[in-house]
Amino acid sequence: NGRDLIKDFQSAGFGYAATKTDLDKADPAKPLLGLFAFSNMNVALDKINGRRGTDKNGLTGASVVEDFGLPDQPMLDEMAAKAIDVLKRSPK
Image (cartoon, rainbow, N blue to C red; front, side):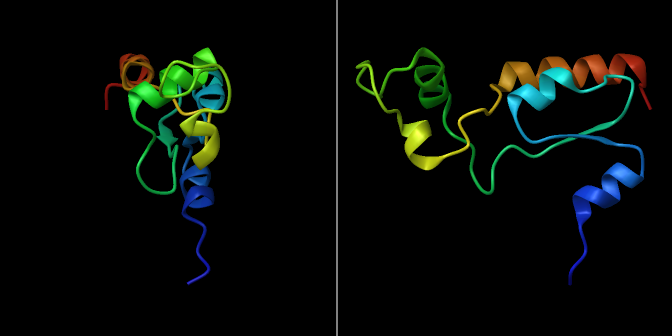
């Protein structure tokens, strides 16, 4: 219906992260909305290999993450650590 939900969250005082880089920079003093994929996120092994610059077979070159886009997705532990940091600052 033309509504921009990300802008609505930002207007309500939320920070927004679309990548791991954004997540790392996000202000933990503000509530945070993180949306890192259009559907399913890349699986951990593919993200790890993407960071190493290897493919699913451990060979150097293009990775599954590069093939399907969104190469700067955070790992679950990175998202959890940021969530805990935000909650410490504002437990409500």
